Image (cartoon, rainbow, N blue to C red; front, top):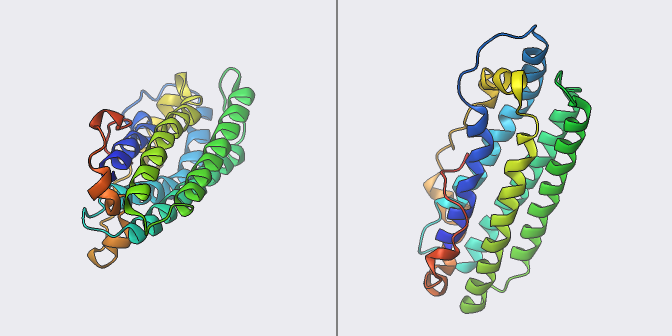
Length: 218
């Protein structure tokens, strides 16, 4: 089961990876100014998100269901918080200096907040599972993984709206919008910070085809 959640989260890297790369500096500076304002605020959020995802991906296979539950719950809430912060970053950066910038900004903010609410929904779903019933817990995590796959798609689409023309290139030049490398998960807290494994016994039997996306998380 842990593998399913990890596979779903692997798609989370898309958001930042799409923003990474090199772009030609050929605008009048407005796009760069907007990108710097946004990316400077977004950088710590991308890092927090990467760390939260890594906590789930690196869950030990021998973790107990209760530890898995606590870790998943904490990680999903952390990701939800970063989504809200990213929405505020888009808002505070102002209207992007591109065609239909105002509408694109509104759409991005709306979708990021919607994604945050969806992650909070997953947290509540995980909190409601019974870690004492291992089979039921494993089955419940399968449902969580299915929901996570859909949310990851929402997540990828949100900021993608802002990536067009000069703005995309400007964001690609900003260090704050580059791919975040997950911080090492301390071994002492690994069990609690590594979701999904407690269900590894029963859920490990779930077909691999149910695994959501595939990509090393932010």
